[in-house]
Length: 295
Image (cartoon, rainbow, N blue to C red; front, top):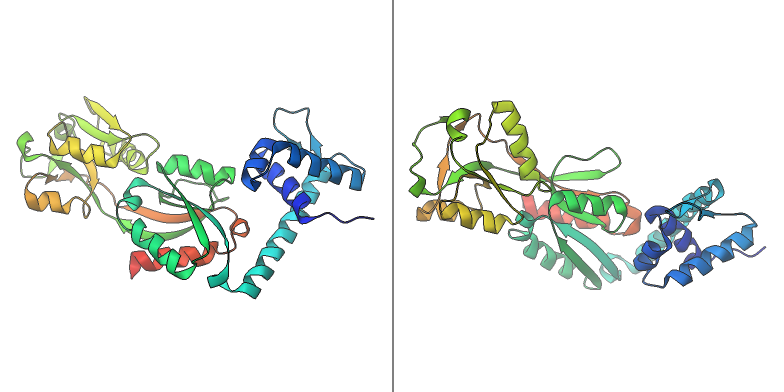
């Protein structure tokens, strides 16, 4: 009996993981017809249906699921052998990395430089988006690692806590907000500038709002932290911002911290992943991120 090739095993694994020939082809940098051909060869080899094409998604049959599990173990073993022989510094591959905007505008450039020094043959494909969207990419298998705020995911996602970031309400001095601790009803009289609902800060704002019994009269959302800061400096409202990042604006007198009761909680940032075997250096890369945040 003929034995499956690694290309055929990759085809069944990624089709099952991503739910379509098209998505598997994109992941493996090949054509949809090539994926279909490899799976057809497997079905002939094992004389059984592996994919149910009657569904809208390419759903694996019971036999297909068993083969997918075996394929995952074999592909992981292959990566481990290659990594052991070559050594991490000589590993060649592509790391699909996601980062929230706050990470991207703070320590991400230095982190990527450290990756280049440690793994010169690794190519980094970077996506900067809101945390919620990056988490969806992790679940879909199109990202290896995401550096995001949280936690707001289920037990299927593995995570390593990287840092604890202090957030506080900020406003332009031109709004002449009283220099004392404000209650929720007092704060609610000012326009709110908050991040898009796909961002972790927006979710924290919602939790704070429920806890404080807070009902904002006017809310303006933006999909960019940089834009939110700019609008806050220009007096369009108050917003929850990372204290250390906007400290220069506080020192310059263009932003002032608004003290509230209750205060905004800190935001924890994590390196999250779902399947470290997809990229064999996943755990090593996360160790570098952890060192960057705590070194």
